Length: 302
Image (cartoon, rainbow, N blue to C red; front, top):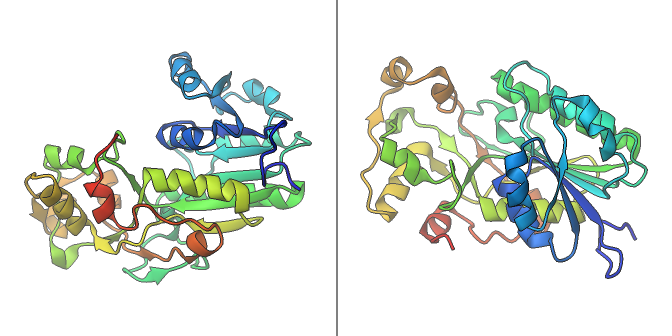
């Protein structure tokens, strides 16, 4: 039996989390009683938070290859949630991680948190993981590059790599993922005629999807890590506003928005798709606790 398939009582498998932010900490909370947990960190200020979560911090920086040499042979599985650098069409951070892990004789599983942005604009169509990739931004192209590098590494090294394509992550206790923050800023959305379909996953469900992939992910497999919602962006924020007694966001036409919002903001308003999550449920066996954003936005944080 692969040691990452079922942790043993007296020889807990070791998981290395690369990019242990909000989702990584939620994963740690699910696994700390059954796994030995390590996290790569370049921030001394982060170490106390990691230790409090039951995670042993390892000093290292994906932008400094010399700091990664000790990663070889440390872990049975890796959860890679670190973002690429902010520029370029390649993910050299993932390339450096692979170079360090390639010398590991014990690594058997790797789960990578990618983005649904790799699909580009799909005109609101329902799409599954076989959809041809059409990244429209360098941000998405870096993710495509990372996916390809990791799946090639998996085939070459005999490591089962699972790629989770993740849409918008939300939770009422997630910094940057609480829609009330945007509502408070009064950030506009598009009018109904110009609006786009968006996809979501609650941060807790994403953490559970990561754990499921560590146990049951098929080799070199891609999985859409999305909930069952099928909402346009404006409707999502209207729903959040109504549930929490806040003003609905202003609506702009696409033409006015293009003249008002930043290019980065507009990039999120230019792609429309609806993700099919059959593999998430049938292959990974994930039962969503927040099947739609209605359930997730009604749930008060602990």
